[in-house]
Image (tube, rainbow, N blue to C red; front, side, top):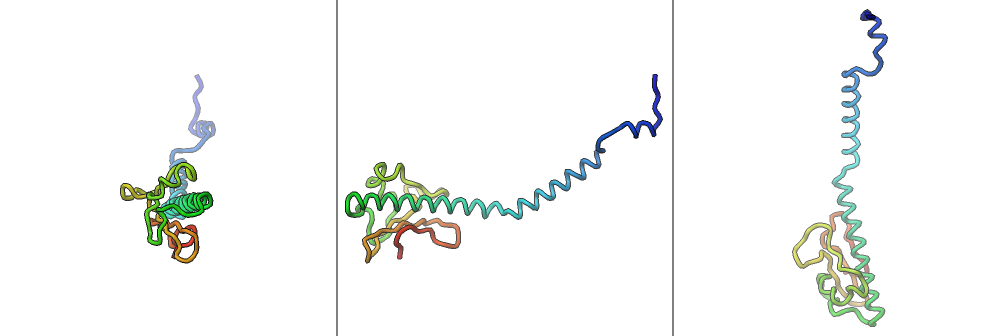
Length: 144
């Protein structure tokens, strides 16, 4: 049987102590928290929703322009006053757009969160996101 002294035991043990591991984990948690707050996840989510709204507005506007090109006029849902894009669904789905987009945030049942409007002077239309969260309006086409 081999008996080691305390000095020999300390020399044989390799690795980290529990205290050292806890200190490193604590520092990693603090650094991770700083990174999360610096990234501002709420702002990133808002930007992502607004980017999705921009894509939806462009898709609806593109479908209306495609309908206009094919029929040589905008559908009956496009008036000089604002109308919910849901009214245009029978005219542009599925020939010009696969399905009518809906706002990424839950809204009122039966509404898309997007408005369409015919321009008063030009033979063009506009599409607007009603629930834009950023500082700028999300619009495609003419909107006044």
